[in-house]
Picture 1 (cartoon, rainbow, N blue to C red):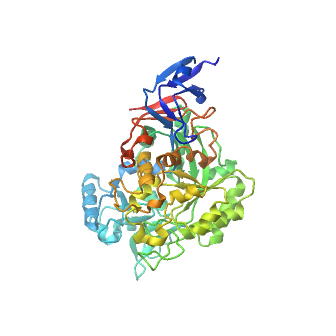
Picture 2 (tube, one colour):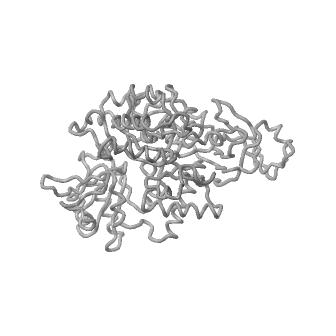
Picture 3 (tube, one colour):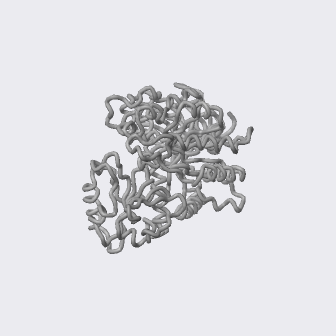
Length: 531
């Protein structure tokens, strides 16, 4: 090879992911891309500016998180984690401790309440939270982020009273007299944040927080994140990403999905940008979440027979029209779709607007509850199922009580999805769940939580192999934005994006995958993280 390579990586067990167990020992990189793959002995004859000894370690194509929220993940570091609270009393005790740490007038903001864990069997209402404070505003959210709770002071400040008309897509629970109970649902967060203000008080602090999250992602072997950014905070985050890109300081590639795409008036559509930062998909919501019982089901919840969940749009046709408008403009479409009724509506929307021959794919985000008829329809459509295997952490022990045994049979049915020939990806939905990819991979392989619960494996027929689970996060993840020709596998012409692991993931016991750590993350041939 006559070209002077930028880097040669050698002495590794570099899994290509092109097919199972396929690996090479060395790769040569030029201008950020793989130019050659082969053996150690062959690599000795290649001239390079830099030679990196992989010391026999396992190397895989780097991970991509196909659905997460950068801004919200950053902001969680300033909020109170309530995920380990098992009663309303415990929630209040944690919030009281936070109350002692804050200055007068500052809000208490908490997140990740698991209603399934609470012995009281319900979310806290305004009166429960008033026991913490009637003087300080309090705002906390559920595990999924689709339900929120506020105390009376917070409701007073935000003017949520009997006459309050919630923003489109938001809902307010009320008592028999029409008074808000303090429980708020769906698209209420943006409204509340106008009053709460930013978690990081200065632009510089927010920038440092963002850099911290991006570096943390790199430390887990990610080189691409696909972030859903919402107004008003998301706009600044995108500006900060542009600044970091221009300074050549991005440790990961970022793809931005958008719910309110102000760039459309400039003609900016999906794909605008470059290999480090670009516009992703126009993101829509059909329904809510299973955790807050707002995901739209065809039949009532088993644990709450009076509800089938909620649609975000007033009518099915309103949703179909909105998707068609964005699609016709030139955008890729991504839709939050959890319940089986929502999946029906999503399929109808695709059938209504898809133009045969168009290379754009419709991203169905979450795809948690499906039925056999829907699976047969999905096989015939250009769809990507952007799922979150780590959601099984929360649902392996509570799914059946929420939606019943029959629907649970096809809850995140990974084996079925793959056997049907569907393209399935892995993401985290961070900060809803942890973004550690090894946790997600283990969940998909074992269908148990990290403690090995439940002992009777949750729908064991839907377990997949370690190879298939890793594919969700690299090989298949590349399909999410039509990037399979330059990401996801170790092949000539693709980006030199790798993760060097401390042990061979394909030779690790499934229950131990969570303990694997990343030694190096390589982005375009350059080391952006080293342990």
